[in-house]
Length: 309
Image (cartoon, rainbow, N blue to C red):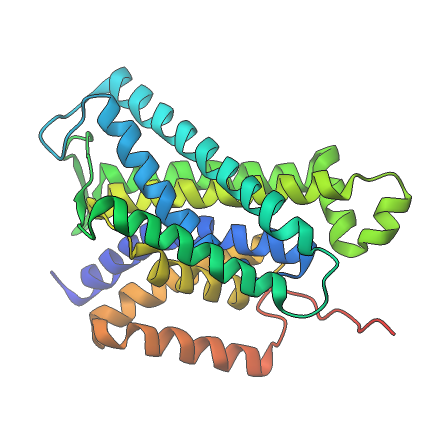
């Protein structure tokens, strides 16, 4: 491959990886935008979502890469698995909010954030014990179809990931900006007390934010499994940390910023790994993050909020 073809190939790979990071980053930014809380349990909601997707795909009789589907059966199997995974992950997010975070809503200090770390470790160790710390082969029912454009190979799997991620991100952006509940979410993010006095059900809005963010994390987990053909108990840490970095880079609390940040982190990781070394990926990512925040403390698309007196 020529140098240009290699660069373009890494752009393609980076878009696939960045789509997953963007979906995961949206969960961080939704919760932070409303509660100003870093939800570290989100790391392992993503991991649980990957296992839920694995179980649902296996329930269709799909094992490893030995069973391939085409046409309508492929679309139905993937769509059903995605919907069930998102619903299960969303319900998990609601349970975390309702039973561990809501009782601490009015507690000052970092206790709520520390609680999310504890919940994250509970999920981590539950899956660790249930899977005996083994990496599991992820079903991949998609046929190996490649498209060749100017020396660049685009797999059918990548195209499906782009389409799914684009639809989910577009749908979330439309929901936040156009729907009644989306307007309520923006009102609570701006001033929860004022929104409550205007009749907004703040608890309901927070619950919806957790459901939507966790559902997107579940979708990202299933995308991870399909893209890499495996899942294990430890995938939440690396992917979650990079997605959190993407949310901060784009402007945490800003929905378009999380999307842009996720895509940028995916591109930085693949291009940096190609031209420098894979082991330097984290150094490159966090160096760019620090450099950006020095000159743009609110992130690339975030707005600096005035301090309340």
